[in-house]
Amino acid sequence: MHTRLLPLLIVLMAAVLLALGVPLAVSLAGAQQQRVVVDRIDDTARFAALAQFVTEPTDPAGADINERRETLRSELRSYHTVYGIRAGVFYRNDSPMAHAPDDWLPPRTGEVRDAFEEALLSRRSHDPEQVWPWQRRSLVVASPVIRDGDVVAVVVTDSPTGQMRSRILQGWLVIAAGEAAAMLLAVGAALRLTGWVLKPVRVLDATTHDIATGRLKSRVAAAGGPPELRRLARSFNEMADNVESVLEQQRAFVADASHQLRNPLSALLLRIELLALELPEGNEEIASVQAEGKRLAQVLDDLLGLALAEHSEADLQVADIGALAAERVAAWSPTAEAKGVRLTGACPPTTAWADPVALSSALDAVIDNAVKFTPGGETVEVAVASDGDVCTVVVTDNGPGLTEEELTRVGDRFWRSGRHQNVKGSGLGLSISRALLAAGGGSIAYGRHEPHGLRVTVTVPRNAPTGEATGQGLTDR
Image (cartoon, rainbow, N blue to C red; front, side):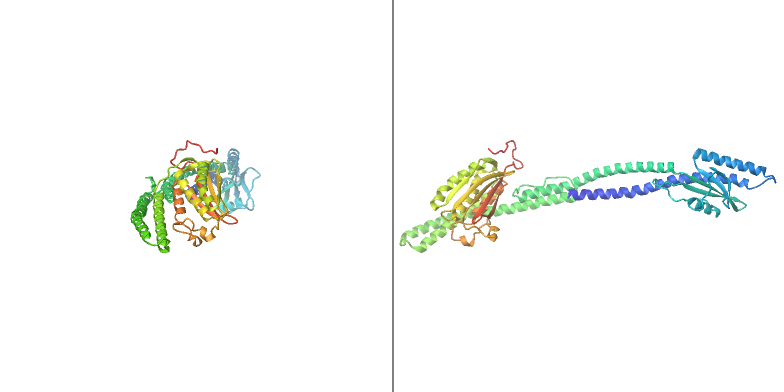
């Protein structure tokens, strides 16, 4: 979410800065050109005033006219020498009255000609086309020379725009630097804003994950952020409290019911035993009742064990998984031999974080199932291995195995395959194993073993879980 929200904020801020910066840059360029245009208009107005008197002869010899023309020419030459601007005064028929440099004449086409024609209509240039920094062209301004209400000549200036374009570019660089600085500030503000907004979301996500993985005591700590998210965190904590309370009540009910039913069931079994003494030996009905009673007692014991497993907290420590698995193999070997099943173990020393008692109980349930459903003459194998951050104990058998549909249900409470209904058991052993392993961050998975049989993989972490001491290193010995 952070990677999606942050670019969105940056793009929006960049769009705002561009929306402000582009008009400012255009306005700066327009202001620089307008300044040059006003200067040229003032210059052309002064030259038009000088040229106005040149057109008025004061004597037949025209001496005064020549003197004024020379004055105009001198002014134009000085103007061109000092500013490098071409300037001239031309009659309506394009013949020059005075111009500098001497070889400059208005062209027949182009921007200069357009300005000249506009001035002949008694309109002074006031809004030439904008010159941008990347355009190498001049700026033309023309003003009419008017005598007695008639345009008798035109003053034209053709200014180079190098300095003006340089000033525009410098102004743009300043704007760009300001935009870059503002963008950096905007990015910093966006980082702080997204962090402030998303911090409660990250805390909520982490807490939700903790609760989903069995740590029901986890709660959302008080954090900053918008009021709506803080209110959501409080509501989540209230929901988690209610869910934990309901689960606690459910577990307490199962444990209490299992415990309370054991006493009357034990009394009932005792009376059945006494009753069996008064019946003929080998009575099938009484034997069936005794078997069902013992099965019910086993179910109650398993229910109580499941409730305690789901309620208890794991006592995690660094344990030698290989030694623990080898111990369970040795413990179940007599049972396997009595059934004619060969139980083998490949259990190299491997350390991991686990609750030894819980892991031993889980392995007992898995090995018990493997031996129970493996026919005589077949083999059950127990293999311990480490792979990166996890340690695995794989139990494989050569029994009938399970179908794909059955693999999706194995481990559910009270579930047993329809082919194994006559085999002793309550259907809670693997459920208890899963609860015991989950409390310590472990897991149990099921798969098919080729050519036939079941593969059960018990996984425990090799890295210290959150909150545990990490000073002890985990290395294969």
